[in-house]
Image: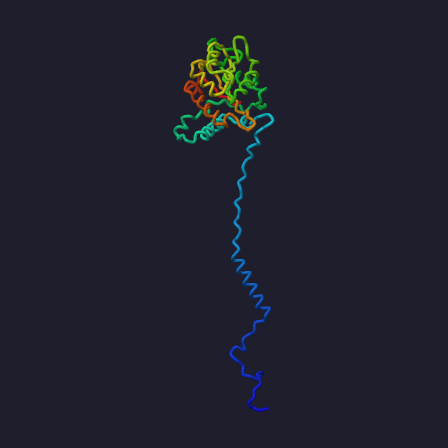
Amino acid sequence: MSESYRSPLSRSPGPNDNAPSSSPSRTAKRKRSTKDDQEAMSIKPAKRKKAKKAKPDEDENLDLKQGLNLAIGKLDSRIQADYVAQRTKRFSSDLSLVELEDRHIPETAFRDTSEWERLRILQNMPDFLDHYSSRTEGGRSLSTASKKTGSPHTLVITSAGLRAADITRTLRTFQTKEAVVAKLFAKHIKLKDAIEYVKKTRMSIGVGTPSRIIDLLDAGALMSSKLERVVIDSSHIDQKKRGIFDMRETQQPLMLLLNRPELKTRYGGSSGTIQVLMY
């Protein structure tokens, strides 16, 4: 063999001959690592969900079988005043702070009845009235009435005509020939007929809706001069879980009634006081 011939295996080393060779397995690992990094960068961290604040169970104080809001009976005078103010603000959001303050019913207007432990169902209302009327200094007996017609000592305010009829029947335990427990509202009784009835009736207790009682007062048929207490049928709820303070159509007239000057000026006074009782 000639000396000028060189085998390819015996050629001089090139510049890259000393570089470490990349094995197929190492290259595959590098590709996988790069792909994993890219995928990790493309995945956005999951947003942490805000923990929902636990809301109090709005139904925990509602006895649907009895049709009662049990929370009402637990309120003392101060909380009753706050509760009524909150409801006024809810349904009168267009009023200014000054106007809301003008419609505020003071704490001194409310009689604290939170000590009453019995259920505030219809059947217990006579005992409730008897209990708190007997503790009113100088108050008139529930079974007596002023000689002046249309001048009850007690008004019971409720949300609907049917409920007014039920309350009237229940409270007739206090009725006598000279002291009528009067139903002041019914769908079949027109306002004109109601005015005539009230003007000629000696009544001890009047039962009706806020709107009808306002109409009778405006007509001069119903008088508030002998009034000692306003009882609000506030624990009662309907099938939709609504009480008299939960509906605009009853809450707003009720507040107009409670804010009438002839009533409001006598809240918490030393004499001739009118008390508001939430049943």
